[in-house]
Length: 338
Ligand SMILES: Cc1cc2nc3c(=O)[nH]c(=O)nc-3n(C[C@H](O)[C@H](O)[C@H](O)COP(=O)(O)OP(=O)(O)OC[C@H]3O[C@@H](n4cnc5c(N)ncnc54)[C@H](O)[C@@H]3O)c2cc1C
Image 1 (cartoon, rainbow, N blue to C red):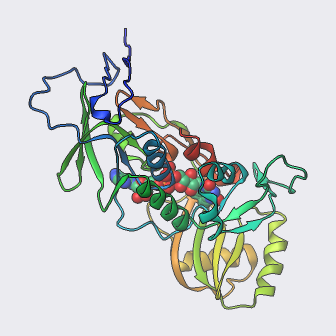
Image 2 (tube, helix red, strand yellow):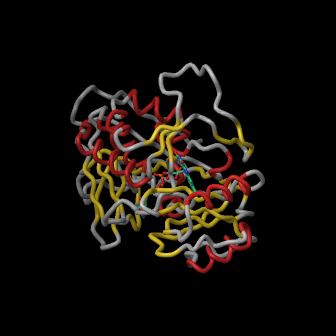
Image 3 (cartoon, rainbow, N blue to C red):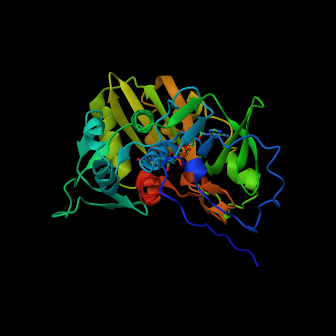
């Protein structure tokens, strides 16, 4: 019979002194002698400094947990997946005293939207002090959350990819891509939908594969705003995955569906965008000078387990769903802590 037990947690700031005991946990190697192991350097190591990892680090610091975030990228990613925060996300940001600095960088919009790709109007009389949507690009929100975590005492190391780990009865030895080893009591995989931590754990990610694909990118256009607005309104009546949204100074976020599902590891080309725009809108709007080009699918997947021994999964590493199915990326897990 497997059991996981935590003994009493003394209220000490020095988490290393805490008396956690893990016994006979599925997936956990049998305890070996601790004599030859490196000392525990952190209470929690987090793999990935996206919205989930950064927010989790800040939350753990509020409880004096010694936390290290390892992020493989040297800078926050430049592409903008998160385009906005929804009401509950905004409320949670306000509860953590973060809203003021976020509002400075965001643009408020009415709280309308869509659910299951069906347009719904902005509801009236919502019981919320923040009954609006907040347009704010992903790199900005990640930067602000990371800054917040660091202010609270989290360590963030960028350019460090988690490549492997091994867990035992006392902790987890995490190995970086360059071979460096670090040790902590727990490891949390916040490393996105293609999570290395989840794969190394051998935890399945069953669900529905992508059946549709959408191109998404940021680029300049060669036609007047009015022409774009008219087409977007006309096509938006029947196609939810199509828009050109101005980011100012002639730069637009362009989203356009493609037929079929391709090899998603391959980034699309500008020519792919032009071709699809012509197919859907009858014009490619003279798009040029792309900043970044990407694609997303509509897979829905849920990790078979969120925890194996001392290793946990959170955020997109634990579950993904299409953004058109109800937007709440930050809300649904990152801030609520799953
Ligand atoms: C098209 C689209 C639009 C969306 N729009 C919204 C929106 O408007 N609002 C919203 O709230 N949500 C939105 N979402 C959802 C949102 O983007 C995700 O839910 C959110 O990014 C998940 O955050 P995360 O931190 O769990 O994962 P990610 O954002 O994927 O971050 C994972 C991090 O881990 C790092 N990493 C990966 N592997 C390793 C490794 N081995 N070692 C160390 N680091 C590693 C990555 O570099 C990355 O920084 C959208 C999603 C899509 C696809």
